[in-house]
Length: 98
Image 1 (cartoon, helix red, strand yellow):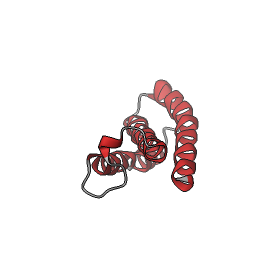
Image 2 (cartoon, helix red, strand yellow; image 1 turned 60 degrees about the horizontal axis):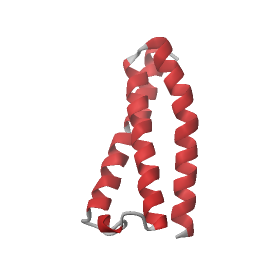
Image 3 (cartoon, helix red, strand yellow; image 1 turned 45 degrees about the vertical axis):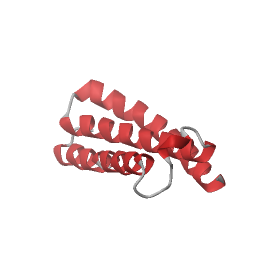
Image 4 (cartoon, one colour; image 1 turned 90 degrees about the vertical axis):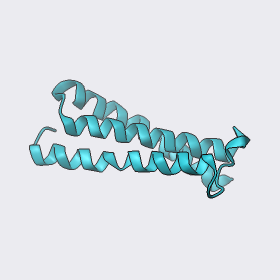
């Protein structure tokens, strides 16, 4: 439980810090890369919440951590969405928006 809880707290802290900076950049530029970064940060936030629920045994009907369960697929989907974060970063750097 300890490792999962630490991962969740670090993930949520990282998501909070990144959302402030990327949100400001998106409001300033309205660039596609910044939008992809924001969506990726949202996925990172959901990933942190799923790990928090797993560590604290919240919503046990989701069967957190068991392969093939709804919690497993929610975790996997949020990870896939979080991969938009580096894609948006690369787009911003390529277009020199940030």
